[in-house]
Image (cartoon, rainbow over all chains, first blue to last red; front, side, top):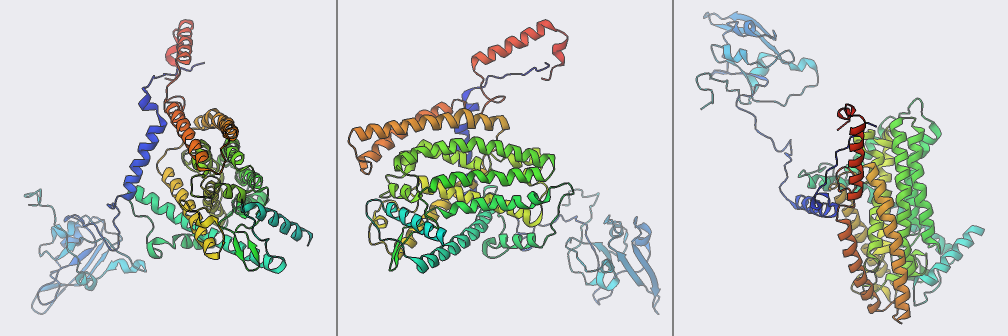
Length: 165
Length: 444
């Protein structure tokens, strides 16, 4: 017998079902006829991503089509998930270049440290999110793959310019 | 061969009455009749199945539009083939059977709920009769003289599919859904049956073709105008009968997961899904037949007079479907507007409002018919229709004003009448006196 029902005496306009139904039907009809829909028709229509979006990597190249990377070894050092494999090489002029540069995109956590640390502004995380491959091996990007990517790159957050102006 | 002859005799009997005042030639005999029936069966079944498919598509598109989305628009033009894709997917899927389910009924239930919806179509006249070279071909599969009683009988069977599905699944949620459904459908079937009695009084017959021909004319004699309240009650009950929002308690997701079809998957689930929309179409067809003059075209008598050419059959057929589709749209529109009733509200609405109103309305219409008959006004005259319409408008205004005073949806969120309120307060006060320490522990 612990029923302690609080009974509220509500005014009629609040308890009328008929009027509420009619106004509700009018509202839904208005939306039904409204041509303005919120759906983004994805493959044809895309929402832009933030300029600071960090997606799959891209290696920038010099004018003569070579990778900007000088195989300094900073990015594999700073990489917290250890996903960058770098074997440095040196040509006859003493310029260092990467013999092997591989990024395992599955291991990568997209922190963007590699881009931040790179002295040559060679490796970048990209503003890109549509990735699909038929095998897991396809997600280990080699140097050639990284250089052939064309999507825009991430603009890192600059502490001196926090709003990005 | 015996039953064949009987069916033919039944068809002949209906044709004599279906034309109302004029007598149409008898239906064709033997082979032509048989062929015509098979063609009608094929047409009905095809249109019905394709119709269900399109209604499912329409439901998804309309609900999307109401929610400012676009809905399925990828498969085929405007997503029209979406249901085909879903059907193919469901056929390909694995059929699963719960370990504790009673298999014979578990398999039978989806078929039952679908078949009953389809069976009703046998007696619905969907076009003006065609006076062909071989005799009059009725545009109903089986123009039974007891058409309406047949519908009541078959419609009551519909609940079996759902209850058996709930029971044989051996799942408490499914069982609860099935039980709710049976309670709901039985309650609303009564008011539905009562709502149709005024129509039968006006038609003076239970044959559907007679009910249609009684409403034939310029649209003034449509039962929606002469029996507005009956139409309203039938309309509301139809929502309950088809388990659609706001009466979709048997499958209330938030309480019962999926209700009676919680254990069903693949094509068996799909059958329930099809059955729901089949039921919607059947209810809409019944509503059009009983209250909107069936295949009658308003504002003209072109479709009601001889010669009954095939063109008239086609045009009236189109009009009949236009009426059905309009009601289907209203069903969908209501579904995506109203929230679900609580169980006690559902029962209160059915037993305390719908049933007494329907009963009182039967008396009202009977009195009106008697009165107008005594005054010498012919039921087919325009004065008859106008007087009925005027009386209906008055009754409708009174009824809705009454219902609008917070009486449609009861307890908790509504007004309590003063006496009950006082009683509750006294109870509360007495309890507080008896056990002062206890009263704080109550659920507030």
